[in-house]
Image (cartoon, rainbow, N blue to C red; front, side, top):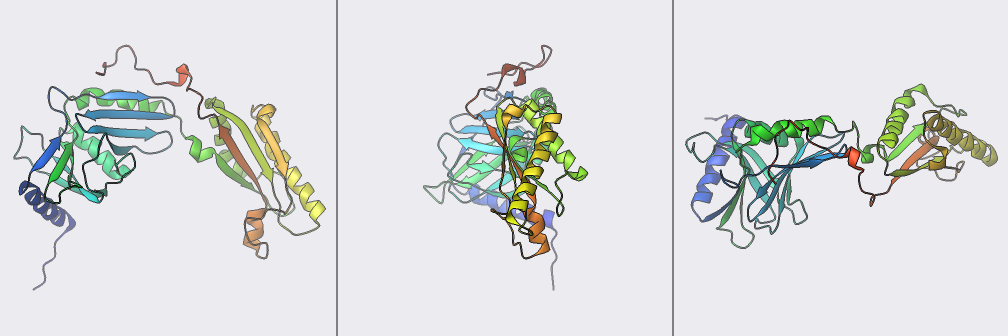
Length: 314
């Protein structure tokens, strides 16, 4: 006889077996309660950080970077969990011990900070569960004793009061982040140096970011060609291509003092010039932005709660 089990059933069995294993040995529990639960929010147009301190252990952080989805991270002051996969679950609050638990699978505990990171799907499940009053929980054996366990939970106490403040921060994020625009390419047809209209959306995103991040101080444009034709002609073609992109940026309001142009002809191919596909890759202008990482974010770009918003405890 063949038994067929669906995924939710198998997940439930896994969680039950894991809970039984944990209950068989001592478990250290970390997390906020009614008296100690706090929510802290900070951010700018580049990032929102919504976190709950875990007393005597670390921080549970919802980190939302501009242009990306939110991710959950566990940062520890001193990690007690073994460097392997921990169990992730959504548990009922302590005052509803008979409520159902839901397994969300496992996630790796690593040595670097953050010690645990979740994908966007499970992070959003965490947020949804907190709004429902459930407590996201991470359970794992300790690194020093295979028969001892650690549980870290995120308390849902007062979460619904501060979640709207987090949404306010998310709503003022830029539509993209620096990493998404810092390295880009514009490709050209054979013998041409004019920008293809399909590339203007990408260039406009770069322009938008430069105008909204005062830490960007330089734009480097490098022109290239394939190896068809004379080397001198290829060099001139790469010069025309880089000047075409430079003109576009200046026309869109980027200061020419920020822009450095170079042209290399066919000297630095990135693909095989013996194929049509490779030559198409080599006919390009690369765009590189440089950022002053040590420059403080200007005050007007920092997230500030409106006067009528909930005051987050610190």
